[in-house]
Image (tube, rainbow, N blue to C red):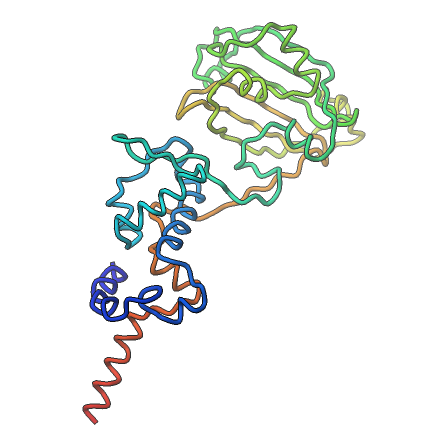
Length: 312
């Protein structure tokens, strides 16, 4: 609120000094960003925070312009740039929607990025395959029924297998696909999974509009006498990671459940957390954080000094 008051008071100052950023001639000489540049960056940072997902509708333009502290014209120029880069989609008469949000990546194993393990393996030059692959149709039971929103007696395709990377076991995987998804024949599905594809790969190839997954990371202990321990080749009681995941299409349509137990060193999990922001950063704050002096405050400061000198 205080920032908006300062901007309103500074209106006459900007009229007196029309050149440069916020009327500062020095900013032109140093190639400082324009208002449109700063508005674009503020919007980019806001969307990168993850509060909005692809396809979500953004607030009306007049609200966003007020949040940023810029004119509607400046906002529209910034939105046009984001539209050209694919970060937003504008539909006449409907509004502005989130497009492809680019989020800086740290490690490929970041959990906030939903990606099939096959893609990660390809980047690392690993060859994936499946062993002990079993495909069946059976009742989901109480626990999985609650997870997938199904009655316990509902029949669903269940897949279990050991994932191999360069012929070494790295994970024991268990997947259940919601019966609303029309999967290929068992033969096709078997060929795809034996060749190192994931169930998520299959869903994407079928055109299922996968949007996000909720993942729980569960620390576990397995021993050499347990089935999972034998499949992963552990020789003593060993700490492992278990990832339980529920995959969604759209906002709330559950399409698949998975539970994957990874061998020691099979996966390196990292989560990048960011502060959630319901509003974009005002442009005046963004510009000042780059070292651009706010001339409004400086003008007011000089006025006080002049008044003090005059009084003395």
